[in-house]
Amino acid sequence: MTLRIEGLCVPRAGRPVLIDVTITAPSGEVTALLGPNGTGKSTMVLSVAGILKATAGTVMLNEQDISKMRPEQVRGAGLAVVPEGRRLLKDLTVADNMRVATYMLDAAAAHEGTQYALELFPELRKLLDTPTRSLSGGEQQMVVLAQALASKPKALIVDELSLGLAPVVVKRLVPTLAAVAATGVAVLLIEQFAHVALGLATGAYVLENGQIRYSGTAVELQKNPELLHSAYLLRK
Image 1 (cartoon, rainbow, N blue to C red):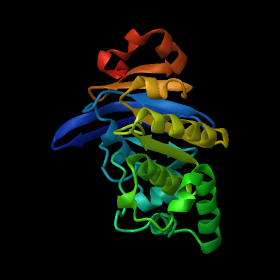
Image 2 (image 1 turned 30 degrees about the vertical axis):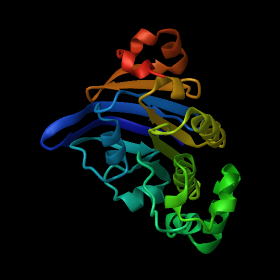
Image 3 (image 1 turned 180 degrees about the horizontal axis):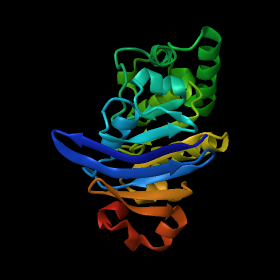
């Protein structure tokens, strides 16, 4: 199951933010999209998720064009998106947040998906009755990832996994993305810090000023960091 973004152009507030962006995230791999803040990464996520309208381009999930779908249809087609900012219903418990995430599934599929997510994040089992506002940042990030994975998506986009998290927490979360990819899911990991993503990814892209400036392998970027075009991306 391949996720392919082809020639995507998206404006915001009357100005172009994304210009002819093309990215391929193959099944069974983690693909990294790197770029500093303000370069259009989150705009791309919102467009692919069906929230922002593109003026040109397509988003394909295998042979299915999901470009014109509403957000709930995108999710139903098999693409789960984890936006930046850990957006949870913070007055609700972890269990209730999981129920909200699986409301479109039948009871059996919702139960199976929730158990699958809890197997990936067993730490959440003892927190099911806890309001998510009481959780640490790392625990909240586990919940939003669990929400996305409970539907057993064919493709997963994660926007800024490491944002605001301690390195030890990021070290806990990163192997989970590798495990998910190993099941055949296409994972697109969007990061501003290259060191988080390149050790995990197979393919890599660099987005700068709304355009793709590099398309190739993660190994090549690691060996030639000047290809990142921005020392900011290398900040640790």
